[in-house]
Amino acid sequence: MTHIYDQDKTYVLNLYDRLNINIINGEGSYLYDDQGNSYLDMFSGIAVNNLGHGNPEVKAAVMKQMDRYFHLSNFFPSEPVASLAKALVENSFASKVFFSNSGTEANEAAIKLARKYGLSKHADKTELLSFQGSFHGRTVGGMTLTGQEKYKESFKPVLPGVSHVIFNDLQDLASKVSDKTCAFFIEMIQGEGGIIEISEKFMNELVELSKKHDFLIIVDEIQTGLGRAGDLFAYEKFEFTPHVVTLAKSLGGGLPIGAMLVAPELESVLLPGDHGSTFGGNPVAAAAGTAVLKILTSNGFLDDVKSKSMYLIKRLNEIAHMHPEIIREVRGRGLIIGIEMYDDRANNVKTEALSKGLLLNVTRGNVIRLLPPLTISYTELDQFLAIFEGIL
Ligand SMILES: Cc1ncc(COP(=O)(O)O)c(C=O)c1O
Image (cartoon, rainbow, N blue to C red; front, side, top):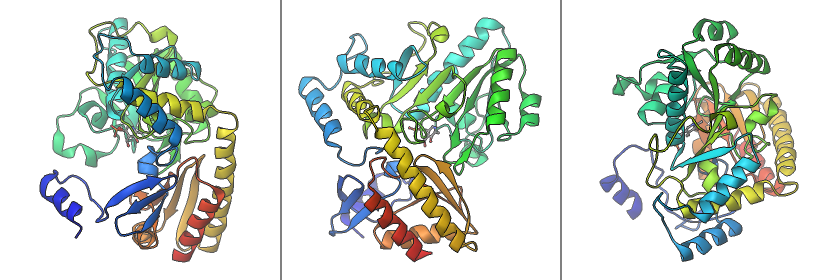
């Protein structure tokens, strides 16, 4: 047992299934431990390190801001915060941004905005909808929206007025929306839920119903956002404009920051005093975020992500074809890709991969969830494919 593992076990509340590895450094697509081992990181801190580890431009932006100030209260405007908000607005449907520290807090802000919007229409327009199988965070609101019982059964009662619609099921949608609905929270691609994508048919119907019943469509892009799905936002694949988008994870390039992006017609729903956060929109994290966005929106970056995606999915399908007894399906887009396996093989593959210097993540029990750095090279993709194929 490494000293650090031991110390962590002794003093940190036991909520995570830690690996007995002491990571001391990260660079690009690799992490390095204190025993001289390197690990090819195929899940990027669960979609946080989208530009890999130690990106020099993000690091320079952070260091520059650290030299100026670490924190300002929200009594002051802050240059890095205003710059990041401007960059997000200029690259999205939104006209205003609220900053939080995490994804679940961005969703909490969106819940408050939705409830206030509903209440401004009539007294019982407070019902929230989300999908079965979804994941929206661990705070009480986020956990209630999350459509998986295991995350909330020990913590009841949860937030009232929340129902879950069967994923992509038009009939269930029709039976659950009404004039009492104030918002529907969706993930364009369910991440924790096993990399399954919302259908165009469902999306079209949802947009129609949102107009008919006057409810908000709130897109949780905390995992899919900022280049992960090949476009800056995963919603861009469809012909609709969200009312609200929530972000976090990759936004700060590894530093904690979340955001709620708000459409022009909704920017006056929440007013001074309605919401806030001491640390929300930390200047150092915001400086990192501006550097992240600059890279993502630079010429050719997202085209390159799409090309790598096509290559990886094609190669994975070839491998799946050769091992139909192990792999049930390869799915996803951009660099959020699920490899669904039969039985509990995904966890066996994950364990074997670790011993070969490859970091894999498994979700929903039997799905290997690939979330490599968007900056991964073709050589590194080939390295992953060779190790993966060897294990199969
Ligand atoms: C889609 C989605 N929403 C919300 C969250 C919660 O984000 P955070 O852990 O930053 O609170 C996550 C985290 O995995 C997520 O994937």
